[in-house]
Length: 197
Image (tube, rainbow, N blue to C red; front, side, top):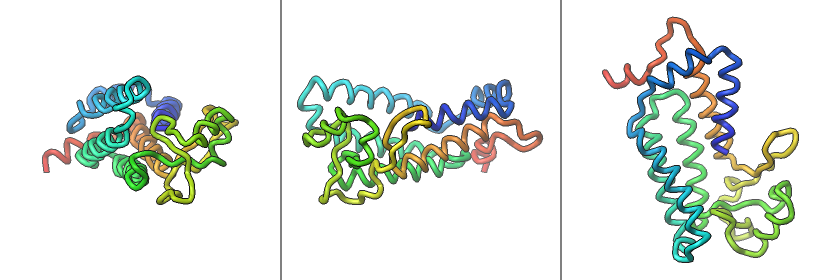
């Protein structure tokens, strides 16, 4: 779902006239611990790949995903002075909390997941985790924070998302708009001001 916020933010930013200005702003953007984010993406893709091939990785994937979330939260907190990052942090934290209370996996509503088709629903009902997800049931903790929101046509990508995903993507959208849209004389680099304090 994080890719949706990025894509929508970029498209809206371009329509609002942020082509040259936005690209320049992103080129000068400085993030504290900026190397952490791409490393986390690679690590997460590695988990997805290896858990299908090595049983011991699959058995501890909940702990591995928890480590990814904790590291990501630290990265976001270090950069909270950027517009939208506080909302992104809250969204990631909501997802982390529900996963932490449910063995490191994200609970998914069977009813909501119907939009993904019968194959996915069958995988959930079989009791096995689908990636980092599992079927929501009576024993699920904080189920309202799980994947309970179905998205389908006319939305371009069929998926099931959580409240945390929504909050996170609003933050991503606001950050991209702030970076891409020319605000005239307004200081666009709050990071520089922050670092001089």
